[in-house]
Image 1 (cartoon, rainbow, N blue to C red):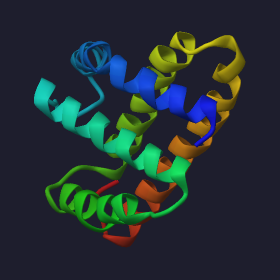
Image 2 (tube, rainbow, N blue to C red):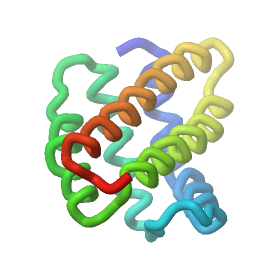
Image 3 (spheres, helix red, strand yellow):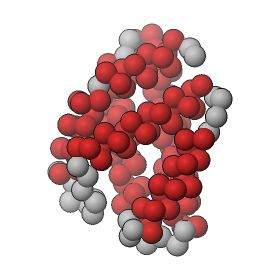
Image 4 (cartoon, one colour):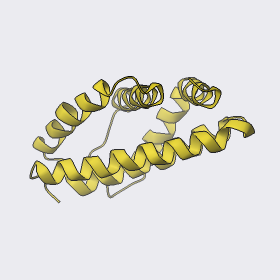
Length: 139
């Protein structure tokens, strides 16, 4: 794994509490999100996404990502989560993580990590919306 990727994952791990606190404030302050998460939910979400990011950076497997797309997202849509709300949450998550993680990185590695992260989260958002449409989720 390249140095920027290792630093990115280490910074993510070291900032778990800050990420959770920031996310909980963002959720509480957003009237457009119908689902409100607990701290435990937020930690689980971001630990899972971090694991998927590590999987992508290692390039050896897509097992975690496939599990997320095949089981987690369909259950959210089946439970009534609107596609638009999920897409909004994914965008907020990406913006929040970017605002915490990239400034905490070294100058030499920040830009490479930011590029990876933008592309990684863009794909999650696109695939989530596509899956929601395929599953017949609510707009």
